[in-house]
Length: 201
Image (cartoon, rainbow, N blue to C red; front, side):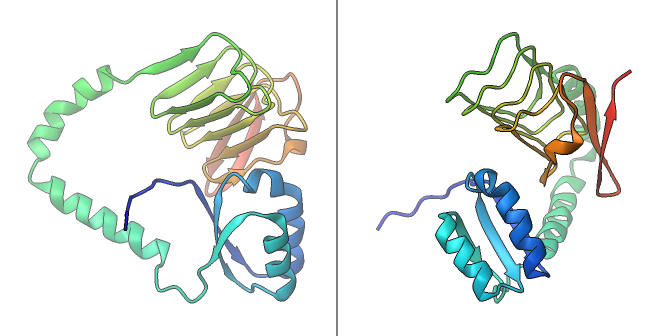
C-alpha cells in the first residue's frame, strides 16, 4: 500500500435549489472540470445525473462530519497559540519580511499548456493563452486578454478582458464574463463577500 498526501484545488458547493445549481453548472462546467467538487445540500437525482454524465470529479459530503467553518476556527486558534510565545521575534521579523516581498513579472504571453503557481504578486504584460493556467496567492495584474484560466486570491485583480474561452476565479468566486469589458483595464475586488468590478481611470 502506498499513501501520499496531495494538495488539490477544490470548489465547495452548497445546493439549495436544483434549478439554480443546474443553470450555474451548465454555465461553468468547463471550468469546474479543472477542480475537485465538494458538494452538499439538496442533491436531487437530476443533479446527481448531470454530475455523473459531465465527468467532473466530485464527492457528496452532505453526511460528512467535516465542516469547513470549524476547521478554519480551530486552525486560527492553534496558530495564535503556537505563535503567541514568539511575538517579539515576529515583530522584529516584520520589517524584513516586508522588504523581501517580491513581485514576479512576465513580460510576455503565457503560452498554451504553461502552468504558473506563485505565492507573490504577479504582473503579466501579455495575454494568457487558451490552455494556460495562472494561479496566484497574492494580487495580480494582467494587461492582455485572458483566454486561459486565471485564479487570484489576493486583495485585487486587474484584467483587460476575458475571452469566451477564458475563465477567471477571484477569491473562490467565478467571475461572470458578461460583467467584464473587453480591452478596458478593470480592477476586481471583494467587499463584504461581494465582487466589485470597476474601470481604472
